Length: 201
Image (cartoon, rainbow, N blue to C red; front, side, top):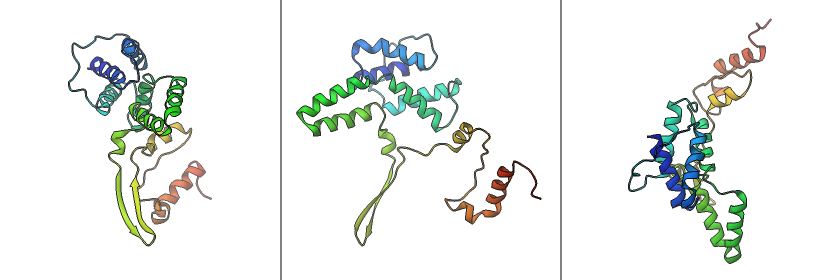
């Protein structure tokens, strides 16, 4: 299963122009290295039509999580899929050269190319943008476009706590005003943390 997914990802790189056909084997080897694998059996055929990038990456990340390559959670999954896509992304000097070449002909065309390139490399995650919540609200100054951005989700609080030495994690129901609206629960937690369990005299 994982071999097919990696072959699909390399094929995606070729189809989108991130890598050349002659780079296919090199790309698979780099992807294997990122997952700590040393063997690869090329599939007889790839799914047709080609699957969306989101599906390919999801299956690879699920495999990585199930096999202990990463911990669960949005942060570790995002870090790994960024690493995988980074192995299919041209060097910065190549990207800059391609952009400058297009910019000399048309700044608009160069900008459009770079935006598409950013989507193809998954830096801009199309599938998350598609899930953004959007609406328009009339105001006295005119219509206001409002978007809840799901493209860059907030970090998992468990991952944040794990990254901070001697931290503690407490998840309370509520909103940004939880410290005020639920102070009976919030205040003792903060005091206990600040006093490191010592009793108040």
